[in-house]
Length: 220
Image (cartoon, rainbow, N blue to C red; front, side, top):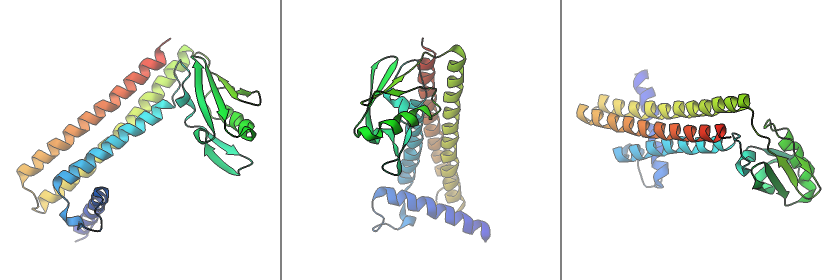
């Protein structure tokens, strides 16, 4: 039966992932994964979405200078022949609310760093004095603030979609288990409620992150 084969492949794929997380791949049969391990793996997937949103929102400008603003900058270092995250090339400090100072460990990369920041679509105009790169962070206009709020909300919605995908994946696993008589109807109802509870909890965490970011953006 093709449908059963596809279902089994999906179950085995997720079970393999759960077993791998347990650190017992060589000791466990994937068919012996417990419900609690499934739920734990599901929670990890949802936590991962929250952590991912935190990192994404850190790159969205606010009215204040923060080192995280440059986290997304990749620097093409001519002398190295490679593209590297800026954090691997320099320290970044915010001496005040309107200035970032980037101090390269290798001064030969300073022009590459300056160029990368200017080209990063962050609306920043860096300059260097041969020792450090100074990055003025201009105050945001009202229109720019609204654009950034929309961007933050879109990031939040993208990560909610990710969490809903996790919910769908694990709901299907439990429904398949009930269909295969591995769990009872009462068990299925209980597990689906636990999946929904986690979904609501982590979706709420995403909303809180977006709301906090919005407050930072509109703060004058």
